[in-house]
Image (cartoon, rainbow, N blue to C red; front, side, top):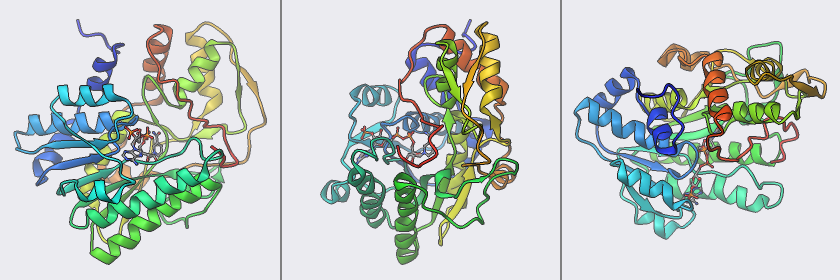
Length: 343
Ligand SMILES: NC(=O)c1ccc[n+]([C@@H]2O[C@H](COP(=O)([O-])OP(=O)(O)OC[C@H]3O[C@@H](n4cnc5c(N)ncnc54)[C@H](OP(=O)(O)O)[C@@H]3O)[C@@H](O)[C@H]2O)c1
């Protein structure tokens, strides 16, 4: 029998990428091919595989091509084995980008967050210069540009969080470069009449990485959880990627921003206590909860595409099962507790 939560990497990738019916229908209504820029990272495989399966189930003829430098070559091999075409390209090279095929539908996932404090110039290069090269090449495509909820100011932890009407803020060097990414795409979209969606995501989670994995592993190791950032927003990676595919429908000029996350703010304390119960241990805490945090109100995306179906309790079950089984983790902490914008 198929395990409820698979533990092998390839099974996990397929499982995470299984498209819901509304995505299959959406793909059936699209035209043209798909290009996933930055496919080699944490979300790219899920996106490329979901598109590939949705195309197959819809019966439409289209190809999915994943573009990355492929610093993890095993990702390329897996994508190719599952029917996704791949092209190796450094998107920071205008010459290499000029050689990329154009495509009706383009997802932009390349970016940099970690290492900003040590090498801020690399983050600005990746988050503003690369977008300028990419936006100038794909002028006739429909684009979903991955962004982040960090482009907003902190919101009160008592409220619903920032919606799309809140003016952007530059809180720390990483967040500032992400505002820059949006501004650069917006500039070229307006110049060339390119339809763009700015996909403002708050914390995608799956069984191998994410805020839930960070909390689960710390609770299991008996380490304290910092409660300074007590409230945050989460979404399961499958649900985030399903919404990314649907966002092709709302791409427009000027670009349309959309917050993508779960329906409620989530308490880090409550998550830790639930993991502690599952691991038969006690959660330890440190820090005093701050009155503000990076919180997003994603109700507009929920009205458009539905509330993400995976509940927080379902996500905690999946992650607890994976961590307790000693199954492989990505080993990439999210640093969700960071409040000074230094990553
Ligand atoms: N994951 C989240 O929870 C989250 C939350 C908020 C926002 N986001 C945004 O969503 C996007 C995707 O997230 P992610 O977690 O999948 O990011 P990620 O793990 O950093 O993946 C992005 C991938 O893009 C590729 N890339 C970077 N620079 C490139 C370049 N110059 N040329 C070609 N490929 C390049 C890299 O793969 P190679 O090394 O193989 O080139 C990298 O692994 C990010 O831009 C991030 O801003 C993610």
